[in-house]
Image 1 (cartoon, helix red, strand yellow):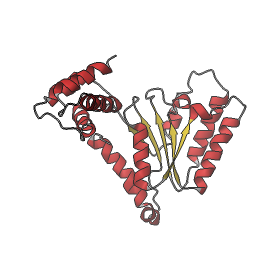
Image 2 (cartoon, one colour):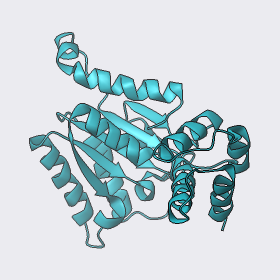
Image 3 (cartoon, one colour):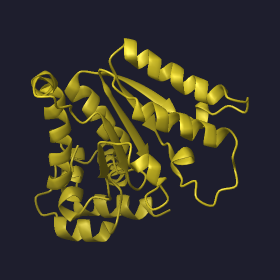
Image 4 (cartoon, rainbow, N blue to C red):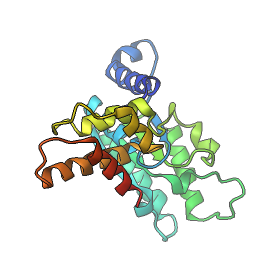
Length: 234
C-alpha cells in the first residue's frame, strides 16, 4: 500500500500501539482502537483496514450498512449490537465499510426513523467500545460527516487521491512483472493521468500489461501506457 509519508506514519502508529497494548496498559494508557478513514472512492480506505488487520493479526469482520439496514423497526440496531457482541468474544478488526448512509450529518435531516436509531446505537456502542480488537469505519463523505460521529474515534485519517510520487510508485509496482522500456518518460505518463485514484492507477497498469501479453510484445512501451490512460477515459 503506497501512502504519503504523513499518512504512513499514522498507520504505523496505530500498529505499534496495538502491538504494545500490554505495556501501555501498565501505565494506564490505551492504544488507538477506533479509527475513521475517509476520502474519495478508490483511494485505499478498505485496503487500509485490511492492512491493519494483517499487521495486527486480527480477523477481519466486514459490515456493509447498505446490506444490514432493515425496514423492520429496530432490527438494524439489534443487528449492530449482535456484531459488536461477536467481536467481544472473538478479537477482530471490525470494518464498518462505506458507512456513508449513516455518517451524514443529522442536522437538517427530516428522517427520524431507522437511520437515526442505528446512528444513535452506533454512537453508544463506540462510546462503550472496549473490545480486544479494533474498529475501523470508512466513508466517502468528508464535509457532511456527523460531528458526533467524528468525536467517537481515536484517530481520523483522510485517504486522499495519490500525488505524483505515489502515482508513479503504484504504477511501477503494478508493472513489476512486465519487461519495461527504459526510454519511457515517466513524468509525461504521470502528467497525462492527471488526478486519478489509486485504483485507477492500478487499472491503467493492469490494462497496459494485458495489452503487452495479448499482443505477444516483449516490452511494455510508452504507447501501451498512453493507450491504457486514454481507454480509462471512456
